[in-house]
Image (cartoon, rainbow, N blue to C red):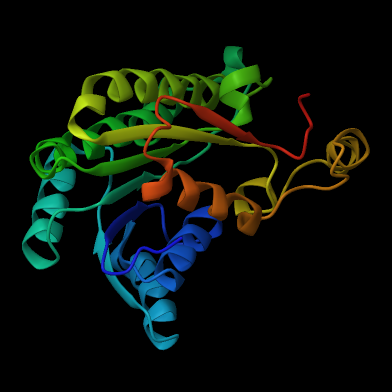
Length: 246
């Protein structure tokens, strides 16, 4: 897949799945706007790609705050041009059983994981509609499809992303803009580093793939959904879980 000179915005690009996605787009020729909460974390990924000879620019933004998202997207538009691709990958987890969950942890997870995607999509919609071209990919989770004990906030946000994906696909499809989601399973990242060993063994013995996934198992699916070749695919959610939830 060729993304030469396409402008790709990746939120949550500082590590894990987001960094792998940013790297794959850069390798495919894109100019990548690497978005993370702080300038330092965004800059780490951009520097890594720059040193490899690719084109990447860091942008600091807390995607849960409208004014920051609007300013960031305006800067990208001014400095690079209209984004061709938006990947909403930014996400956090603050796990607790429902009876012990703090209201602020519910609010913050929904703010970053769901509202952040809504704000970023809203900020690029007019420009993509005017260009009559755009690809939006939202990073949901199998937890959004199946739920998980101790993750009511995370599951609600990731399920909301799937609903958002379908609504955006219906609204923007006639303007050449597609919107799809991926639902990764248990992927080896900082977020899953502390998985209990018995659960890790359950995944390894239950999933047909026989292992947890890696960020590089996820990134190619994002590139496909963001490609010109996927122009007739919209409103879909692609599960990437090694067959765990078959």
